[in-house]
Amino acid sequence: MTDPVAGRGPDAAAFPSTGADAAGTPVVDVPAGQWVEAARHVRDTLGMDFFDWLSAVDIPDGDPPGADVVVHVASSSRPGPPGGAPAGVRRLLLRTRVADADPHLPSLTSVWPGAAWHERETFEMFGITFDGFDDGSGDWLRPLLLPDGFEGTPLRKAFVLAARASKPWPGAKEPGESDAHAAPGRRKTLPPGVPDTAAWGPRDPGAPPPDPAPTSSGPARTGGERGAPAGAPRRTGARSPRRGGARPLRRDEESPDA
Image (cartoon, rainbow, N blue to C red):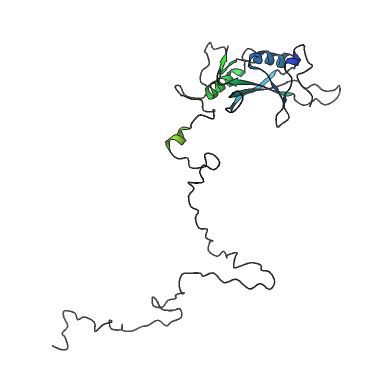
């Protein structure tokens, strides 16, 4: 990978490329004190005149703990060989670490005025103050997305979501957290007319057929009397006398012994 910074300008050696992201975009890490100087060098010397976005990544276990502020810029010109196709878009990621002990960083609004909205969002989401911020309105850093009076920095990993504090989270908050409280799994049943794969399907040659699974908890019943086995004839006519003696008399009948 060619170094997009070193070797271009008298101060280029102060901002060497330190790597690339997953897409192959070069990354340049600079100290927070040289943030604005590096941005001007990238714009004026390297021709990265197109400001794309600015954001931050919370690094609580870093050294020092803090947040990485990242700027993605590109070149609006695509020079190529004479008579040939234009080259691809040149891109660059400028990154610096802002420690939690002093969450201040110079503003880039003097270099790219379009960074104003991005710095306002990073300010309210990560708690990073951009010194010298100026968006032309005369107002200082103010919320962009959150309502007035909101407390906290929602994109910090230490921020507790209100939904998790008020009631149990319905899903897994972190890997393994919800395993102990998982609801017991329901017994899987087959839809009507779908055969059981354990009793139906291809078998190895010579293998005995599997035992058929019971289709119900008792013998099959037809239109006969309740409790009668399948195929038994239905009884008609007078009912048999009650067990333990003759049926009781009604009030209008007389006993044969009277």
